[in-house]
Image (cartoon, rainbow, N blue to C red):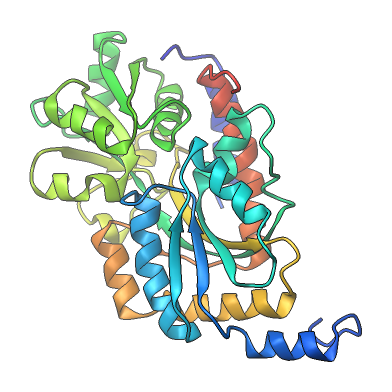
Length: 333
């Protein structure tokens, strides 16, 4: 992983980023259908593989959503090309409220900058409902290393002069770009070793093939509890009850924040009353004890936004990811 002098630009961007239904156009029949919505099961596309963090958390959410909305919510995993496949399917779906998309930040803010001509525009081709989950990344190391803090880690990495291996879930993955951003802002170098997925990348750190990774918390929660990985810090911008004994990287590297999130979208053109109904039941669903407990077990937390706030976050983070992708030296596919 050859670092570029772009860390100054990245740091500036990181700091800057801290933070009608009765219209005459709707016929009587359409308005009635929207009021009755939903009358049949809803398909929830997930642009990630079964067993991934986005899938696991999405299933917890979907179960509660189905109770609140009164119809089954059926998960339809459509992984591929960093989430691009699922995004395209959602874009082209009938905008009637019976197909929605549970999507993570990778497909919304990273993939548009790692593919030359993605067949979707994340800001224009969808109706934004709300974010519903934040998934922090966790800096983990092989327990054999004598590292207990972010300062220890940075000093050790600088002393090894690029000899440490950083595992990621693949080129352009969240763990890849989170690691690039961290190394850039902390001013050390590490050899990037991409794997085919989060599971193999985490396993490589457990086995000692790679020494560290900065990866979504749900992927390493069980291994941390089992003592097979040592957690050093998390990627939220401030201290959080989820990580009572774990500090944020930002305590040592001011301005650093790189957390994943999951939100709900609908195809562009989905009627506003249906989007509003989806948001209303989403807000109720994520406040249930089952969702809160399920998310916490995955080191993740409930968060909600207005549609405008969700869209603004995608726009802001998309600009940052364009710089990080360039710093990582990724070539467009």
